[in-house]
Length: 296
Image 1 (tube, rainbow, N blue to C red):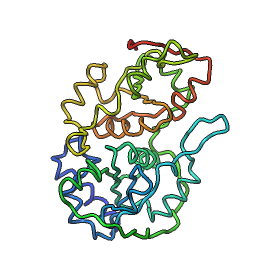
Image 2: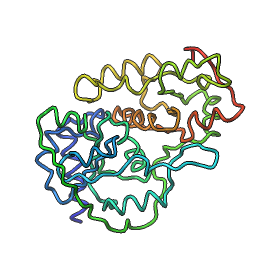
Image 3: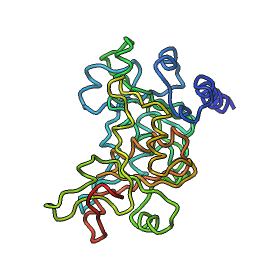
Image 4: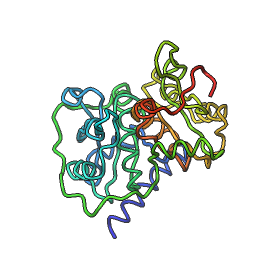
């Protein structure tokens, strides 16, 4: 009962601070986090992109997990999610239980942290947020960092993992989405990758996919926080995505950048969002069509 009460309070406080906006229901800022660093019920996870960054300095109390631990490489060279067995080991190492209150941060505007957010949403974890701006904004705000590593409070993750939120798409689902007339496909890679290179044997984007580059959602000049809600919604509306009920499938090269975009869409309140796990690394290995140029 006590754990349930803590869960309700965690979610209620986040919603209260951000005015109940769907835009921020999965986000916290440094002002919220700083006075809670000593909370024994909070698990703070550092996913800085440089493996030595955590050793140099990090937010007090944070435990580190590299992005690569959440992925695996298939025999054909395609990078995909690591699978439930490895995820359960990682959750146990970090001391995460289904009742844990989790805040994740990185130093790349959510590029790394978005992957764990995606995985935790898939198994139905509710007490979950990203630190807006991550380590960069924390430092720019003059908040304390430490070099001493924190030991995770490891424990076996109870029970089996299962898919609670259907947020993973395979290649068959992508093909079906191109025909159903409802699902929108978004390519979040660079302009050059989306447009393709006519000199390459196979390049470009999946026909019908809109271009929504992940980095355009981040204010790199303002501490790596996300852009204002209105700007993000305007960019999505230009792609025909005004309605947050519209099903969306995201892809990039390996699902890495798509994880950040997944977080952004979920923060904006889009309900049915999936990542094409194999992404272009898989699609380009097939004979399925690709389109060059900037038209979907």
